[in-house]
Structures are given as structure tokens and as C-alpha cells.
Image 1 (cartoon, rainbow, N blue to C red):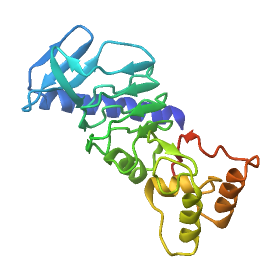
Image 2: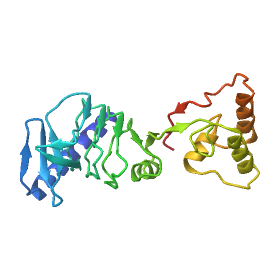
Image 3: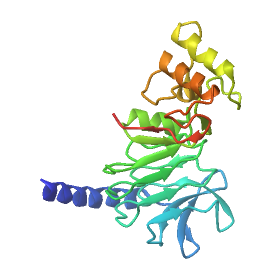
Image 4: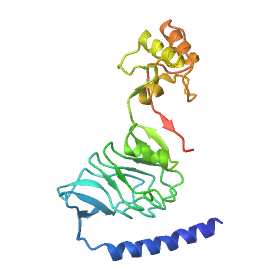
Length: 231
């Protein structure tokens, strides 16, 4: 089965690359490491990379032009690649841009990247998308059943998201449990002290223990990384 899957991937790769080469007529430029194509917005998209590093952090500028993202097939079938970081101004990840990379583990997508192809991570079974809550990358990960890791500054227990821990956070949790005030988004994630996926009176109890200076099981007051598992 695995052999058939590999054969299928190779055949698809040949067909898709042939289609891409036929359709691609724009002039490409290279600085020796990155090959790019200019867009109508006076920036560039990465079309190819000469590096074979496991971790690649794409620069903000290539040949003096801002990098606006990764074009189709740019990192297709790059078996060496385990991690990629897109620059902050990236807005685009094209068709099969990171496709067929079974070793790819992490891709960091900036806040304003809102044009992500449905096939951008085709056959990347181990990939986790690092992104910010509520962004297009976060929605994309949820829609495509891809594990995502939030880059937001989430302080465990800061249920009202005011940057400080106080008894008002306990009150916010209690009001949520009583259905008087719903906590959503990052507030929900911060209020879920025991990280069981829901807000309950036990979360308020943990907070009260923290303020009473009892030892708590969970790292209340610390910045935490939120990971949403696929499925």
C-alpha cells in the first residue's frame, strides 16, 4: 500500500509540475539561494529554494523586493524539510507549495496571510501550523483538520485578558459557568485552567487555590502554548 502511495505521489508530482511549467510564463529571478517571480504589487513570491536545510526561515526581502509568500510547487517533494518560517509580510501560499513532504513538521504562517491554497499542504501528514488565533491560517488549519499551535500570548488564568491575574478572573469563570457571560477565543483558552477543553467550576477552584497561595497542579500565571490537535 505504501509503495502504491509513493508511486501515486510521483506520478501526481510529474503531472502537476508539467502543468505548472506549461502555465508559468512569468520571468523568474534568483539571488543564488531563492528563485522568485515578481507580482503586480511590486513584491515577489518564492518559486524555488536552493537550500537543503531541515529548517528554512524565508527572508523578508529577496533582490530588494518584499517577499509576499510562497508560489505553487516551491517546496514540493522537499524530503529534507522539517520546518519552514514565512516572513511577516506573506499573504500567499500557492497550490502544492509544501505538498508531498511527509517529514514536514512545522510551518509558521504570519497574521496577514489570507490566501492559502487548499492543496498547499497536500500529503503532509505530520505538519503542524504555527499561527495566531482567529487568523486565516488558524481557520485553515481547523477547516483542513491540521494540527495548529497558537503563537498568541496566552497567560493561563487570565480569563478577562487584561494582562494581570486577579479575583476578577475567578468571577469571569464563574459567570461563564452560570451562563451569565460567555468567554470566547483567547479568554476561553486562558480560563480553561486544567486544559480539558471546557470551562467548569473546577477551573475557578484552581484559581482560588492559586490566590490562597496553595500549590496548584497547573502553571497558572505562566505563558502557555495552545495546541489544537487535528480532529
